[in-house]
Length: 471
Image 1 (cartoon, rainbow, N blue to C red):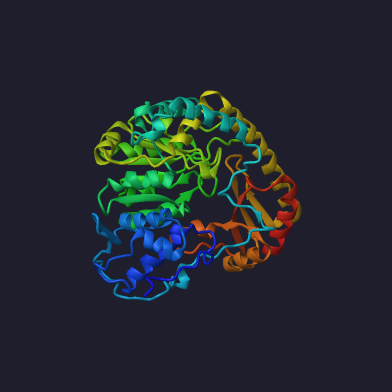
Image 2 (spheres, rainbow, N blue to C red; image 1 turned 45 degrees about the horizontal axis):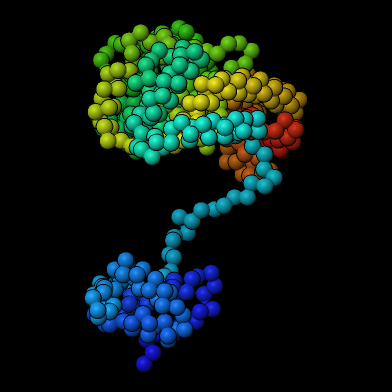
C-alpha cells in the first residue's frame, strides 16, 4: 500500500519539502496516520516520490520540530500521540461576523476639511532620513535593548530644552515621559488613580478622552465653557480632582484662555491636596499674527500642572511620538507603579527626532509650516465668506489648525453628515464633541473646519462642495 500520493507540480510556489510536510501533517491531524505508526524511511519515501532524500529529510525535520513525529535511534520516525481536535472539518472556515468586518472606503476624489490631519507636502524627508542613518550609526547598541520606560534620556533632554524655549515649560528631563500618543500616556497616568475619582472635562471637548475615562470607571463630569473657557464655578461644584483643559487653543471651539482664567484655574488646584490640571497643548506651536501663547505650566508655582504635548500635529501624525511632563510627586508614583513598563515608542524614531531637533531642522520646519498654514487659513476663510456671505459666522481665532464656523441652515446634523458623504467631503461637526446632551442651535449648525490637509488649489472646490452640503 502506498504511504500517500504526491504531485510535485500541484502546489505552485511551494518547495517540495513543504508539500511533503503538509501532506503528512494533514494525514496525522485527520487520523489517517495513527499514533506510534512508523513512517517510511527517508530513502524509501524519496524513491516513491522521485525526489531527493534532502527534501524528505527537511520535511521530517520540520514535522519533528513541531511535535508531529518523534524519532528512535536506528529505527526511524514515528507518529506522535497527538490530541485530536474536537471538530474535524477538512477545511477551515472563517466565521468572522459581518459586524466585525471592516469597510474599506475608497477616498479617491474626496477633499478633506478635517481637523485631525496635517500637511506633509513640505516635510524634509531627506533630512529626516539623514538623521535616521545617523541614529543607526551612533545608537546601534541601544536599538538592540529595551529602552528606559520613560524613553531615552538623551531624547528627553532634547525635548526639555525645546519646550523650555518654545513653551516656557519648567522641567528636568527626568520629568518627561515619552509615549506613542497622548491618549496612551493619559491612560497610563489615570491608570494609577482610584476608581470613581472625579474627573472634569471641557464640554464641548475631546470625546476620545471622555470615552476612555468612562470605560476606566472614573466619574467624568463635563464642564461647560463660558467666554473665557472652562467654567471655574462649575469645576468647584463638581468636586473634581483632575481637570483636563486645552488653554492655548480650546478644542474644539478654538478659545484662548485669558490670563485671569488661567490664574483662577491654578488657584483652584492648590485649594485642596491632590488636585491636578492636565494641560493638553496639542497644536500650540501654530499661532498667527502674534507670538505664541505661553503654556499654563509655565505659570504654575505649585507643581499642579501635568503638561502633555505631541509631534503629531507639527510633523507626521503617523510618527506617534507624544510626551507628558509630570510634577515630582506624580513622577515618583508613576515610576513606582510602572517600574516594569516597556517604552512603546519606536526607538529609532526617537533618536532620529533627537537629531532633527538638535540640528535646528525642527524649529525651521515649524516656522515654515506656521507661515504655510496661515496662508491656507486666510485663503479658506476668504472663500467661505465669499460663498456663504452673511449666513456664516467664523470664530476667527488665529491659532491652531482648525476654527469653529456656524452656518445658517435648516438641515439636521444627520442630514449634513449624509450629504457630506454624497459630496465626498470630509467634515466634522461640533456634535461629535458634545459630551452630554445633543448639541443644537436653532436653524444653524457648527462645524470644526480644518485646513491643514487641503491643497490651496482645492480650497475653492471644497467650499463649493460644502455649500452643497449646507444649502
